[in-house]
Image 1 (cartoon, rainbow, N blue to C red):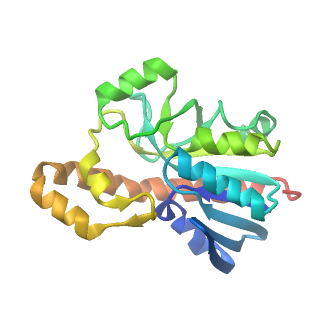
Image 2 (cartoon, helix red, strand yellow):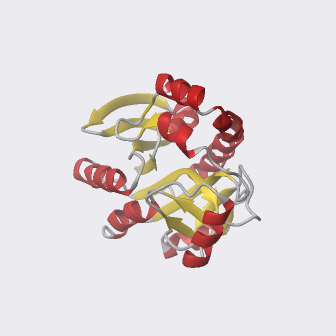
Length: 235
């Protein structure tokens, strides 16, 4: 069985729709679905946003399940101008070395170096600074913590992200914070509307960010279909 882990339900939703024989349940703050993806039994796990929660929930996965391989997927921000919204990137610094030759046989993605941060890096100036400090091309908020847990168990690990915001975007960090409760993993639309009413300047960048998520999710799910169909049957 392979574990497909996502920080957020929004990232996992298109994949879940393609699965059959679904059994959904929660273990504390870990939300799980056992299902069949194609002909393969899988676990879809929502590990949450941020390193602390993602680490806690990844440890819970291994307490209750015995996956043979682990795929972490979700949204990521571009730290370099060359990456565009919707582009699928596989980490070459967190993905297991033994998996890389197999991945090179696939299509529809690029390799890149990932960096994990504790907060959203939402302006070109901050992205440029972070890229210089880390020599990374993609930034997220979970990969390092999840990778530490998985690598300690010597399992095949694939870390991949689809670009949700490009280098030039100025993210509406206040609106994004108002619109989502990371502790509960839930959208907070009423709070978001109240925030935007007081900060109308963030409405346009918020709409731009949200509009890019559709193609990002579609491309991520398309690649996960390819990955799942080509991974070794023994996993």
